[in-house]
Length: 185
Image (cartoon, rainbow, N blue to C red; front, side, top):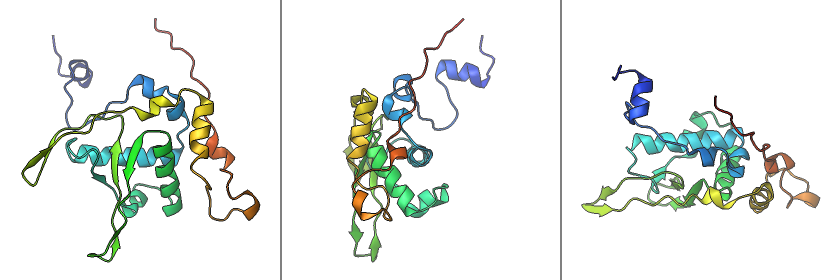
């Protein structure tokens, strides 16, 4: 018998409003455990944008740096680093937009969440197929693989001394310890 509670709706798969599911395997992955607070803020802002478009714009999600700052990220450097880290860890694909000469300003990048199933969308009368889930984060199966992926990003800060400009910040390469197995009952 259904009592109409939120828990009952969750069991049935009925939710009010948009939502995004995170698989247990993704949340327990080495890549997810390496995410920083800023990485998570960028990821959650992209998820909100995805939900705002009813799941039909994955691969075409646009969030500007001012929108990221409004979401609580401190500055452009932190946003840029978080986006690079999310891309290196396989959670996001980024299509760099570049400069929009008609508006005289930089156009926002376009993002795809690699772990989310999108919906087909209609663009100028044409049906555009939804991008498939690629689970790129799952390719990083060890803390060493995560460290190597993050090391490829390059310099983490503009104000580094020249002698170590190529070395990534040590805190940016840390991976949280592996979670313990859960016991039920």
